[in-house]
Amino acid sequence: MRKAMWFTVILGLVAVCGYGIKAHAASDAVQVGATAPNFTLPSQEDKPVSLTDYKGKWVVLYFYPKDQTTGCTIEAHNFQRDMSKYDAANAVVLGVSLDTVEGHKAWCAKDTFSFKLLADPDHKVVDLYGVPVMTHGDMKFAQRQTYLISPKGKVVKYWPKVDVQTHSEEVLAEIAAEKK
Image (cartoon, rainbow, N blue to C red; front, top):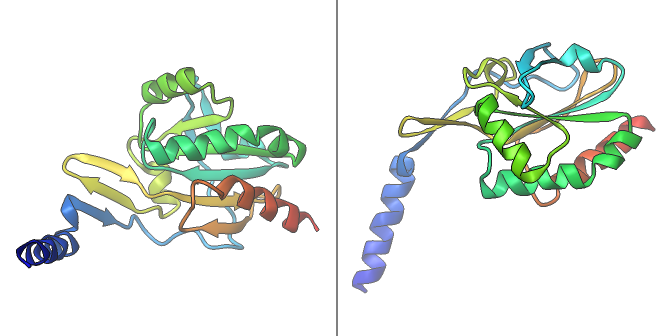
């Protein structure tokens, strides 16, 4: 009985306090049908990458919390696994997090990702797209979200919640559906 009471108290505290995790919305999310805001960020190669570099291609712009964490690694490996399907669909994958170029370099070297990971430590693009920023102590993380941008530069799909296990397949299915 005592354990059940403590368990209830702890759950209540976690619910009230968020266990030190707070989410702050930067602004409203970019809406489906809107022109995707252009941006330029450095990639893991420390070279600038702009959305306009991919005009005429489908762009999977996915935001994720942190390099080399379990969920982010699963999601990135699934995108990498399906890279030939993205190439065949005339699509590119761009990952964005608040990590640095150096962090992206280390992760790409370890896990051999061939798509671009973009560094946004000042959360300029995260804010531009309205991706909530979560804080835990002095660390900040972008919430996991994805935008699918058409070859004409319009947002055609927005995933505010993502299942890392199946997300790549969902994105590929949406590209196929949009092409019909």
